Length: 84
Image 1 (tube, rainbow, N blue to C red):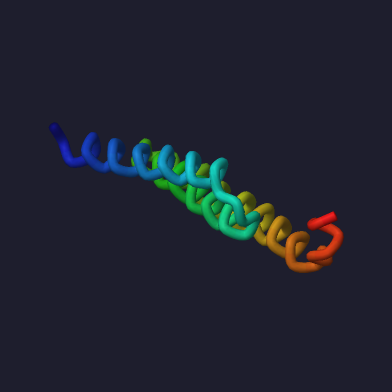
Image 2 (cartoon, rainbow, N blue to C red):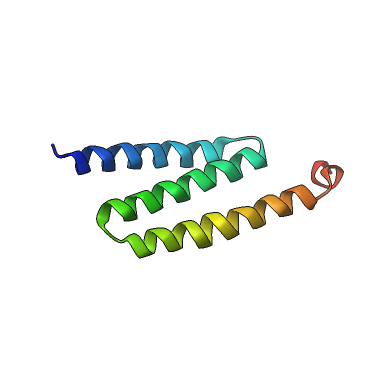
């Protein structure tokens, strides 16, 4: 096995584990951080495939903007509204 294959398997397995943790997490902030980890793992897969531009755009737009927007939305929402 080559080094690229081993790195791909490690990154893909960690992304799959983070995605499962994102779904089963009880805390929404933890789910957002797991989501950021999944998106970083996807960008690492793009880097391993040689698509550097797509990997950088993945990090800048999705991790840098979407996850931060989700976290700001969580932080600005009142807790008692969420609890009912």
